Length: 301
Image 1 (spheres, helix red, strand yellow):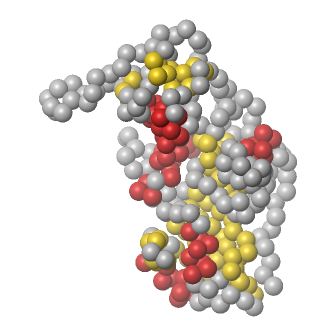
Image 2: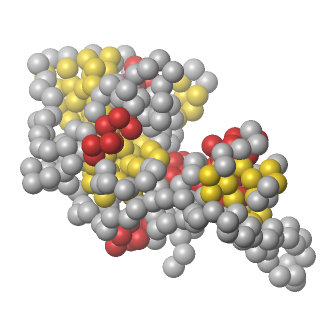
Image 3: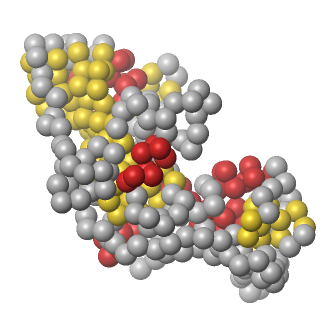
């Protein structure tokens, strides 16, 4: 019978026993902006005439996401619910353009200007929901993050999701725009998984996934899949993809007649799980993060 990968041990905070993928960066504290700040002026709409000056500022949903208040989609929902104000005025549309977040409040709390982008690698154990709360009362990643992140880290958001029973590398960031960029299939950041599965499959079948596959009307993009090892009808399969549709790896392997008994994400872009203990997190240092961001589509030189 196939043996699972070697389990790593070590402290909860990535201490002496851990072998994190990158050294810790500087710790920064979060917080809210002081009350009483003057609200910024709203910028004029983007001119249609290219000879006119460009619009100043950004859409408020984008600014809120960049400040780590929520993802852009969540920020748009907050605005629709009337929870976001500029001074005493309720902001009615996420397309409102502002030059800064001075005077903006969410649920009555002043919003602090965006801090420098931070990125963490977290080893998510199986049995946790990738969400802030679960209606069914199941534990979430935030229960584990209380013991994993440095004190004063502030709010972080997961980049994508891992299913309840899926374990492995989960990226976390305080920057909602960066989160969205990493999640978009158009950005093309590869995700690598190792799946333990039961059943019969050939390497040729796995190699056929490089052309993509359609399952029940859903088109999945190219997948680089390889057989790592097998014992009887048990096998370990490595799969690298760039789309990350809901339950993509499980659905593709089940379509090939396999039963997935364990799924581990081992890499997201250049960031690898390596020997990081389950439930531990490590911060990517600023130089490594900046270098990575320059490789993404649309990055400024």
